[in-house]
Image (cartoon, rainbow, N blue to C red; front, side, top):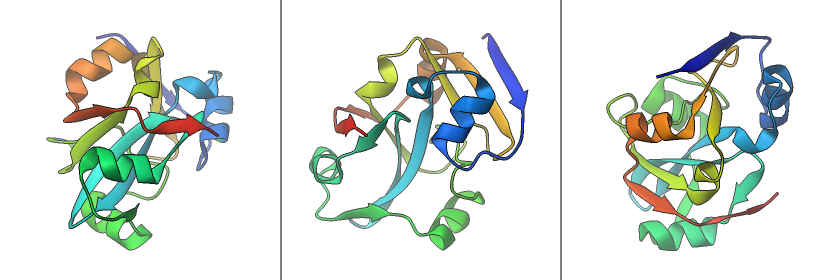
Length: 142
């Protein structure tokens, strides 16, 4: 599986990541951890879009949904916001939910467990490796 690995300055935002990668923001796979009801899940969306939390809540069948706190994120993943890679089990012990906006691109770029390292690979290869638990359509333009 072909991919590019980049080491770069710290990039805590999607915009900064796209800039240092030299790639359009749309191919960025923004990985967000949510608490949905009584469980946590990893949601991946194109960095050019934002999640409609009401639609995501409905799609995953949760009564309520919120972002994981910084402490919860660290406890669940050992990572800081902005460094979470777009992989659930077995890498991160979380259900993986992917928005269709990610699948609209031929490649995906993401921070690889660090604010200073990125990977760019084909979306097809990523999908094969990541094996999402659920694909939804809950994103809207930023």
